[in-house]
Image 1 (cartoon, rainbow, N blue to C red):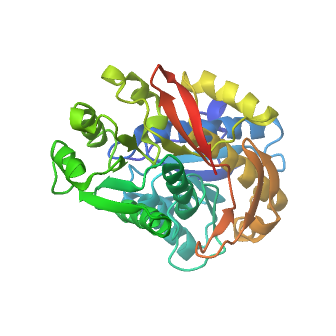
Image 2: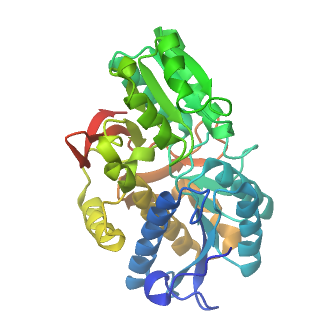
Length: 371
C-alpha cells in the first residue's frame, strides 16, 4: 500500500512547483509502526519549518511518503517509483534490511538518499557517493552497549536472537567486543525455542544478562514476561540494544515489565536550544514524548535542506556536497565523513546513550551510560 503525501499544511505542496523529497517510512506491520510514526512526525515538522522560512530557493519543500512495512522489496520498489516521480532526494527508513535495499536502488539510479535511522554498518555493498546516513553505524553504538554491560559487571551474556542479518551483525559486534575483555556471549536461537524455554537455557548457561535481539512486540514481550516470572532468574538483567523500550507502549506493560530494560538511544544528555524547541513541538504533534527517531527525522530534513538549497533541488548535483554539510541539528553539529567500513557518507558520530525506564516511574527515562 502506498501512503499519500501529507496535506499541504503539514508537508508542503507536492505539485510541479515544489522540491520533493521521497520519504521511506515503516507505517504498517511487520514494520515497527511506532518508530515509523515518530520518524514521519520529525520529517513533517522540519518540512513545515523549512517552508515557513522560504523553502528551497523560494520553492516549497514537499514530502512524498511511501510505506515500506520493513520489507526490502517494497522499499526497493518505492525507490523506483519515487525516482520516476522526480523527487530530488530520498529520506528516512528505520529498518536496516529495508534501508539496505533502498540504498542499493538509490545508488544504482543515482538518487541521493539520506538514511535517517538504520544502523547496519554495511548499508551498501560498495562505496557510493549517493548515500549518506545520520544514525551511527551499528558497530559504534553496540560497542558502547557492550561497554555498559561490562561496567555493570555482566560478562556472561546471552542473546535471544531471531534469524536476521541485523541481529546476526549485532551479536557478532557484541561477541567481538566482549571476548578480549573476558566476556562471553551465547546465542539462543528463537526460531527453535519458545519464550518459556529461554528460562532453562539461561539457568543452564549461568548468564547474568539476556539481550532481546527479536521482533517487537512479539516475541520480545513474551520473553520478558516469562523470564521475570521465574524466581531462578530474579537477578538477571534484560536488555534491548535495538531500542524497543524507547517507545511509549513499553511504559504501559502490566506489572512494570517494560521498565528496567536498558536500550540504546541517540540523544545527548541535555538538548540545546534547538533541540528543546523541537522537543516541545514534537510532543504537541505526537501527544507523547518524542523518541530519538523523531529527532532523527527532523535532523534528516535539516541536513537535506542545506544540500538542496546549495543546488536548488537539482538531483544530479545533490550528491556532491555531503562533505560540505555543516549545519546545526537538534542533537549537535552535523558533518559528514567517510569512516572505514561504512561505504557511505556518515555523521560520525551522533551522541549515544544507554537508558532505561525507571521501575518506580515507567514514564521517566534514566540515562545509565554515555558513549
